[in-house]
Image (cartoon, rainbow, N blue to C red; front, side, top):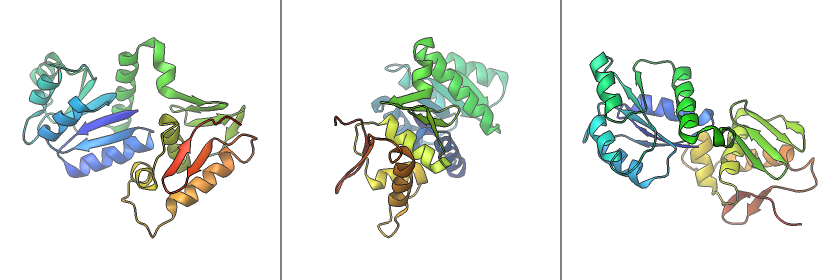
Length: 228
């Protein structure tokens, strides 16, 4: 699931990006209202986390402009905690309102509620459970099963598998994997991605007859069910 975080406090934005990444979300970040609005309109995010006080365009103006064209769920995250502020935010089109400071666990819970509400009962399972062939991943329980057998994955391996599974059939480069899973700019001197892929492959594919994780030489890695 891809989220857009529009937050000008750099430390908070970095903290949220890392934390939500560990929860299995892919997080795109904008640090001002102008860039945030552009990404919100042009992107395919499942939810927007929007700070109320932003440089360029403030959160309410971003929200008003976004609502002219899209109904993406918006969770406002702001220091303005007065009743009239919350009412104004909700009346302007926000789907939820969380006042700073907040507990990270509450933010995650509210995100999950909004995603369920947006998708409806139809796709609650689709949002939290990913499948490919005999592989099943439960994002809420952080549990991966293949052919009925539990895969004992580390946190990074689970995040790596979840990313590849969400984008199954798409070749992901080492650079993108490093950015999305390890929150690091790709360094050609490090082999962290290759090591993690090898370990994941050992747990995901080696015990089973049919491999799902494939290397595309010179390009990256793809998770897909290929015909024998």
